[in-house]
Image 1: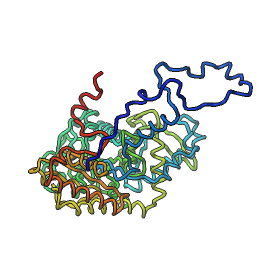
Image 2: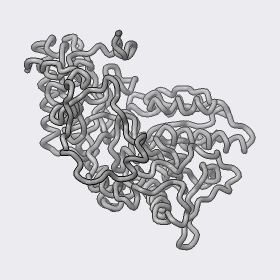
Image 3: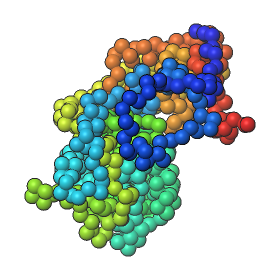
Image 4: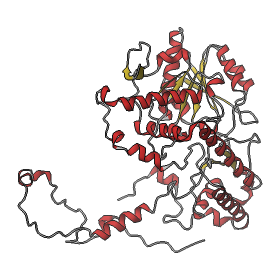
Length: 484
């Protein structure tokens, strides 16, 4: 599949030439407006060294740059844990409607009743979907939802007389989980997974005592496996006076089917940008609403959206609150898209989201489990984790497989995560991919495995068809800017 490399074109400063410009208008044949004469400083002068380009040079330059990227509109984005699915364009239209787009967060409450009502109703939707008793939309990402949850746990236990010292976290956790706990001052201890890929309940029972503030788990976990002992875990933790925090980043596996709030957990954050229709990736935008059970509601961050009759207000008079997380109430554009997504799908549609996500992941698992090693035998939910163990003798590793997938026109899946799986390939097809696309992806991986056995150097030196060849990621991370 090798093709000739494209000739390098340099930067936009290497193009152009003296006197070139993108427009040529005839001389003005009407008097100049007074404003032009009175405000000459409003117009930028020539910038020294700025490229002089014709229109066609500018258009071609930026068109070429746009084609060097890969997005969900180009094809499947099978990043496990990140849930990079296609999102309906109609929700983008809603978010860009000028009645929403032009609202300012400091407007008087009377002038933004529609926006406040939307946020209040979204909180009610999330309560119904998850089984939690109260929500805040303020956290601007999943990690900030975790931080708010850890602050609430500490404040609640402090009111009980002892904030305690330790947060227990499974070895398959998202990396932000231990970071959030540590930021609040807790010591983090790891709970190993058992042979099923779930929390080892017996080890948890041995470790759980009066210095453990909470167990922080993800369900379904990062292996794509449902923590089937969740009720027993909650009972054990509650019996020793602790709390249970659930990372709900993988809610797309359960939405419309199961309500995590009914399993015994105390706190839950939801990533709207993963489950409920926001283009995700590249660091944002995001939204991580936090839900809590009744006894923790008074600790939620302020301000909170409250309803009185048919009017909505900001309320800050909650003496036990952990305070503000940031200046304004969450990422409104993200919450707006989530609101539209929930209304568009309705209860049956949301259930189909989870059913499609689980079906697609298990279809890929069935197409690939005879080619790649499957470290855990428990049935997968929304994502499936393979490893490169079956290819050890060829010298081909997970990174090589990911690079070779680019030659087949696919974005690679998440690799080397979760850390408890050596050489992990974490694949999440999401519910939006068709059977034909899943077959194309499975066929590409099966071809790569065959190549690894027949011509391993072809895979180890991939990619061969991209504009930039094999990168040294370690060197790029250490020296992200080329020397002068």
